[in-house]
Image (cartoon, rainbow, N blue to C red):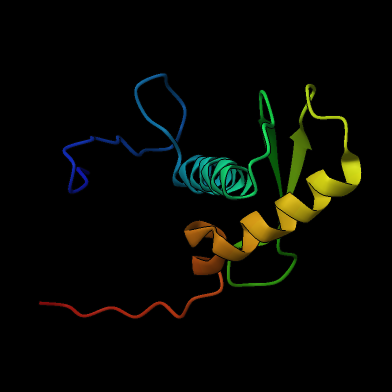
Length: 112
């Protein structure tokens, strides 16, 4: 698939270097959106975070339909020592992250 900017993504079973599994793509989208949102919030508040590392962990739902039941993001901010401020910034980032907000969205489709 190709997005509006011409970036191409190859989806498959994720069993080769050539393809990413759709589940990997959604985890990558969530992690990168949260990183960008966190940087935006920090910039607005004139805070320098330094390097930001995010690990996205998921748990599959135990009931049908097949889906992720939960996402958990682990943030590492090795150069930013104010944990209380970091937690405030992360919560603010989640509020503006398009992907985290989209995961709660209704999905519809049309066959044309």
